[in-house]
Image (tube, rainbow over all chains, first blue to last red):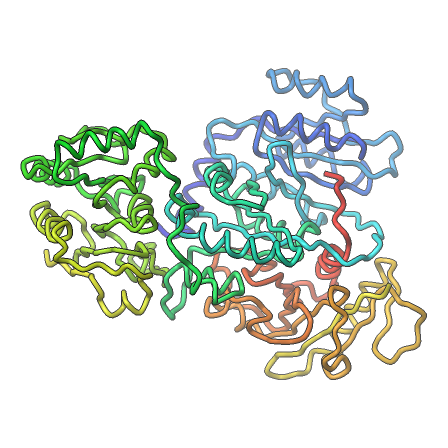
Length: 469
Length: 149
């Protein structure tokens, strides 16, 4: 599905699931209190710095479904709590004690049926056109919200911020994060040595993951939308905003880490890119002991992932079961790493472990067999032989839809062997075929590349096997 | 202390710099800042505007920022992941692009006109009556961050 269709679908979903909308007007000194109170209840907030209470029309707000509340002191903040609890306090016009004083305004929505970023996008579209998107505000949870204004007070000019924001693209997942971490840490350390702090901004889902693995920087969340990219770019918090993109609509082809290195402004980053312990942390003693025990029973331990959220990348369950059977019969300990509805015959099941623990178990394995997803990247970065079963995408190109491509390669970076169906259907790669390649891999008959696999390697077909239907 | 804004004209026609400089100066003044062009007498203006040939190879470090006047072809994905200074190696940090001509087919990137991965893009055609969004952005980049919210 291309981005336009996805957006259309999201809009329809939202239209069926509108939530309760609130507009709060508050004097400037109360801005933080109101924002923090709101942020404790919803992720869908837009801040507006208004020249006065007359900046926004109460009738317009009512038309858009906003219940307007004015707060003037700490005690009146209680009205917010009653609204959160479901009450509808008396509507008020957004007036300040003096009609000519600047005010904070906050648009917010409580909505547990639509995704927060989507609701946030819809709120942004409700902001009257005379307000200018001019930056971001930060809630308690280190989450950025967009800031609009119709007043630009004369500010003394200084040298500006020294901080750089590195923004992870809307679609950044765990596998992308793992590949980006060595580049990010290198770039963070170099900028830090020049006295230039770095903030890494990512969608909320990946914030804890990145925070755990990146040092000497702040990792903050933001509602992923193109409005937010713009708000962050315009913000006075950052001298520079760098996007680590996952889309490229024009050739030439790049591996995604090559693209990111250019975006970070330092092509030498790639020469220093190395397998690193920061991306895949060591396993705890319980897992390590279990691996030792399993090694006494099996010839080899194989991590396995055949399923992910996107159906076109998954390998069919029947193939996975057949492959698991082959492994067990050959005395190879198969270990599922990603949860599925139907359990597989296996040596042990690590698929229900928290993601961090499951990733830390990867270096304990002899190989990982999987689809184009996070555990293949973890294996590559840990220097473990890995075999990728491709489906919709191919090692050198992403197919967003039949007619839309992203000219980027997401192939695992080290020790990778790729099996690619000519039909783009992963089901055309049989379990017998994968098992045969796995045995060759374990026997050392597939000499894998220990240094980084470049886009040139991939375009030259290095360790890529095209499989006929 | 004076901040320096340098305009680099990288359009194919090389005709838009004078109009852009005039619009920029007017908008800075409208926001209450004192502005001087290169060569104009002024005691410590808030902002001094330069064209490339006037600025030469001088550099005032973090007190200077560059703006590039460019054709809309620069918005293609062939360039979007690169930093502006890697595309145009100039002595000051490029902080914004001003696109003078009509922008066609940029929506497919599903981003708003004001954003490009490599820096802020100001579409002059869309804001023909005012450089307000660009100057608001430049004020933010010169001003020190305020920890209000």
